[in-house]
Image (cartoon, rainbow, N blue to C red; front, side, top):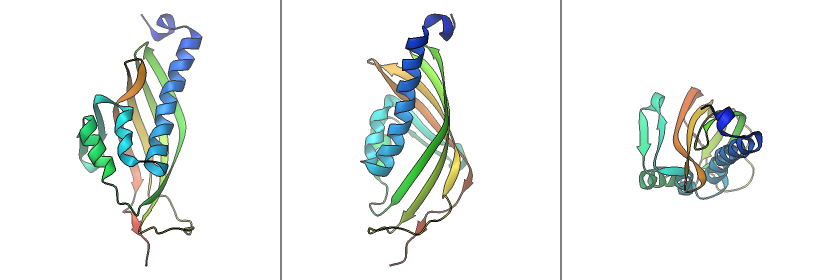
Amino acid sequence: MSAESALGPVERMLAERACERVVVEFAHRLDLGEPGSVAELFTPGGVWCWPGGERRVEGREALRAYFGARPVDRLSRRLMTNLLVAVESPVAARAVSYLSTYRVDGYTGGMVEPRTPTQVGHYEDVFEVVDGAWLLASRTVHLPFGAETARLAG
C-alpha cells in the first residue's frame, strides 16, 4: 500500500508539516537554544552522521553530549531551504533539505562582520513516528563546501 492510498491529503500534509517542523526546530535549537536539546528531536536510537567527516553519533545521550559540547563562545546561524518531505507511510517519511551555516568562535557579543558560509550542503533525513510524534531516526549531513570555523580576534 502506497503512502498515497494509506493517507488522505490532509493526513499527508500534516505529516509533511510535522517533519518540516523538526528540521526547523533542529536549526533553532542549535543556533538560538540549548544545542544539546536537539537530542530530543531524535528517536531513542536516532543517528546523526557525517560520512565525509567520519563521524557517527547514535542514541539520545550520545547526541546530547555531542551537540552539547559546542563551544560556549560559538555564534552560528543555519539557513535551511529547499525542504522536500516524502511521506512513505503513516509512520515513516524521508526528507532532503539544503543548509548554509555561518559560524564563528570567540564571540562575545555585538555584530560580526559578514563572511562567507562555513558550510554549504544538504541533509538527508529519515523520520519515524514514536508515541505519536514525528522524530528523526537518522540525519546524514553532506558538505561539499566547508571550511574550519573562524575564531574572532580579541
